[in-house]
Image 1 (cartoon, helix red, strand yellow):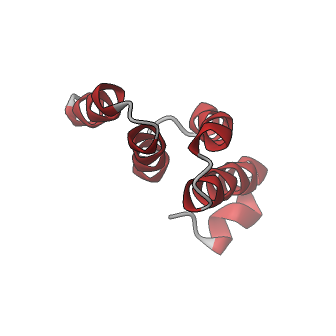
Image 2 (tube, rainbow, N blue to C red; image 1 turned 90 degrees about the vertical axis):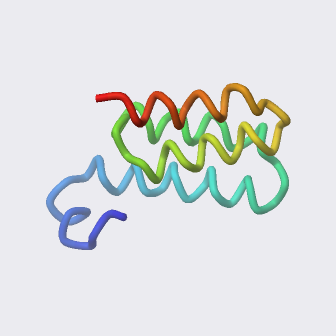
Length: 79
């Protein structure tokens, strides 16, 4: 989770949060295909964010792409 202080210091954090929130909204609206480009943009800004990775996995799961979603979790665990 990005704090308000971090957003104030780092404009990229604000963009990341906007992309992440739009992806999450797409997921909740059952429009997972529309959410993937948004979460990809968030991941370009912060590829190590567990929030971003989890939302991408949820979007992939919603699209029935279970193997890809599961692979994200395994990638996250490797150092």
